[in-house]
Amino acid sequence: MNPRINALTIDVEDYFQVSALAPHFPRAQWDDQECRVERNVDRILALLHEYGAKSTFFTLGWVAERYPKLVRLIVMEGHELASHGYGHERASDQTREAFLADVQLAKMVLEDLSGVEVRGYRAPSFSFSARNPWAHDCLREAGYRYSSSVYPVRHDHYGQPDAPRFPFVHDSGLVEIPISTVRAFGRNWPAGGGGYFRLLPYAMSRWCIQRVNEGDDRPAIFYFHPWEIDPEQPRVTDADARSKFRHYINLDKTEARLSRLLSDFQWGRIDEVFIEAAH
Image (cartoon, rainbow, N blue to C red):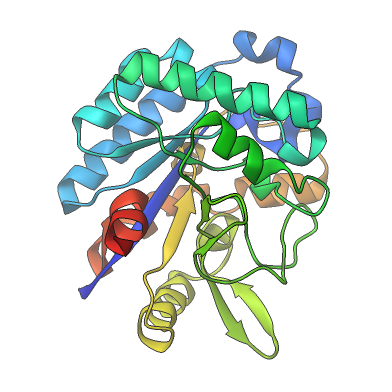
């Protein structure tokens, strides 16, 4: 096992809230869908307990309101509760006023239900970009201490390839903690989980994390979603081929890969790995 402690993060949302499938699940119909997030988070918590790992759960306010026991269990198990916004709207699709209202509401809901301070935020689809330069200022105004909303890669849905690869202090005073990348051939390559963890062989993820730990001498930050361990989730048969491939590829392999990841590396909460360690 690698002795360095890395940061494990989970974006708590359900399969029908994923941006790629948004055309098939209008927000007005979310309450009509079969929710599977609670049982999937229960499985994740059991897996983390088995390996003695801790994590940060970036949780939607929408989910927390409907499953208050879920957020209380996350806290009771010693994990960090953080915000994924309220309604899973991309930050880049909102006005400054709407975004501020969303992150304020999410923080209030999560704190009221859990009884703990919520210090961190992650934007849906890593949607901080040049289109919303005010986003960090809004988070600071809402009382957050850090963000993990930047992925310094090139991608058709998100990414700031020119952003710093490692944590930095934004002009607002907020700490931004980018998802891990590996630098090679003049560009940044994804190294922090998500769909790449399902698409590529596990050995590639392990190598990338080792490269960040040993080559860059830094802790890595990794993320995934509860729906990614759920191959029995309802399928959208009329989605376009790219969306179906990205969403459903290797769902049946994710849980086993996560077990290997938890065995091969040590994992902690973002606040303990990056924020408190810096003081």
